[in-house]
Length: 109
Image 1 (cartoon, rainbow, N blue to C red):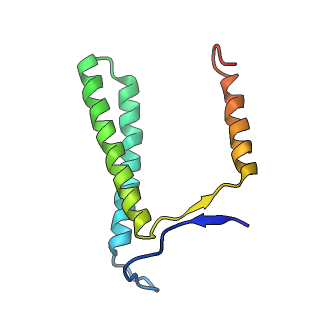
Image 2: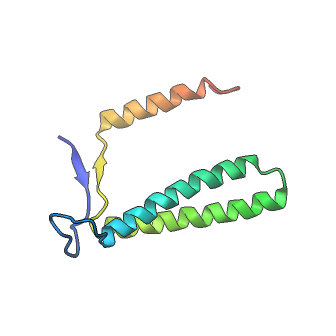
């Protein structure tokens, strides 16, 4: 049986939602956008040739990661973000999978 990691939900959210956005919807939308931004900045950082540009993009990326983390924490504290706890078999399986990836890289063993 899967264990869910979550805080008790705070505040009242409508049981049947209409087209209007509530606080949870807004935070979820912003969190999704922050995740999108980190992907773009990661790509930009990987391709930046100029050291000064690289440093600026890296600082922005760090700020976006920090904002994303704060939004996640806020949603989790309000009970609006739930996670499934992995059992030991899932952890072992993921570890084995990612250890197998090391052999695909030069010098990876």
